[in-house]
Image (cartoon, rainbow, N blue to C red; front, top):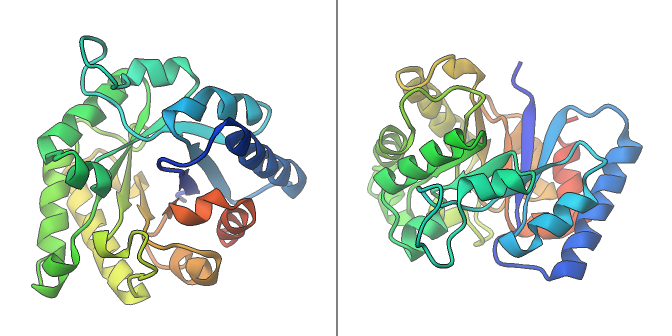
Length: 249
């Protein structure tokens, strides 16, 4: 059985007080919930990693970064290296998010190099893939995502070093959500593709992301091969994020 992972990507949001309050409220929910059927992960901005890490230090909530550089150190002003994230207590790092691919021109090769850096540092890479609306309308959704998988996942990846997040670009922050049938078809294709790329592919967790909210979480989390969610906007409200997590109980 793959244990579901509910990951919050706070993106470029939150000051110190906000981050501590949000993380502390979620830690309180976890403390009062008893045994749960999911893992929870918070990926705040780099500026909040220390504060959020301290706020969840006595809880089972994991900490993650939103990106890392492909190199472990060097003259790369403004970048954060994977070993730095690990040094702050991170266990995961998101790589290849569509906003990085689009805003920063990151290629599959760049994403793969970052995932390799994450593995060297002892982190689990959450490799993001997803098609644009134009690509889906052209009937290219599965071929685009398959190519991203093949280009972005490092050789030798295992369920301990890799999580895949499918986020259709047209559903991120738009309020649009893929249908359960579309999600099922894409996740099944991802699982098949992983079979040729990853050791013990059946144990790799595949998350869905793209306007996940309490109103649709139960339906999405019940889809075959959906092993959790990568949540954007709704992760900034403790009540909403907790409700999404509880859909996995």
